[in-house]
Image (cartoon, rainbow, N blue to C red; front, top):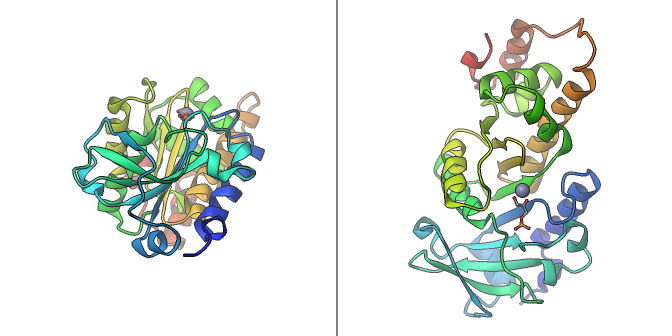
Length: 270
Ligand code: 13P
Ligand code: ZN
């Protein structure tokens, strides 16, 4: 069996959590990530019959039965993942009845998966239906996106249009727009269901006054989505106090989408 600490997905987990922490998106234990391992990856690095502990699930995860995820632990700090991966990360496998998960590796200090694991699992199910290659669900608290939800309309069409205006390639990176949920209590099945419903059509979902969820086939893709939206939000926050005298028109934004041949939400440009 190969050394799990050298697995590419482990190295990516360490790199991405370090990056997100340094960008200020994940203070203290803020944020969480889950990555769906292929069977090939799981078998190469793990004994799939191991059961360190089990965790009950509060949602029905039957659609993901037998799937294996590496996930950040609840209360764990992103800044520490690179130094102590076995303490801060866990690898869990969903039971056949979809009611619990079995710990195969990690959470060495007695930890458990993120309190948002229900959201992650429901979002994985939603994205896999839309795109069978999806592997990552990522949650972060990026400062400017978060700030925007305090001062900007949270109507998702208006929110998206502002982001498309302020980071000119935004429409190419997230042509389906960014979905927005009003403030809801986190860590609940209600927010998990609402987020997953948005993920049927979107890879980015804002939680107003809380943070953002991103999905992707790779760590880079999910990270790049959040990074691009956050750049747009930063430009918004930096220019919202002064008169904006040059704003790209909807026609110019649409031209970019046409040039890159992306299927954008035409009705979200006026
Ligand atoms: P966890 O520490 O449980 O992952 O929670 C962090 C968070 O961002 C909750 O939304
Ligand atoms: Zn959060």
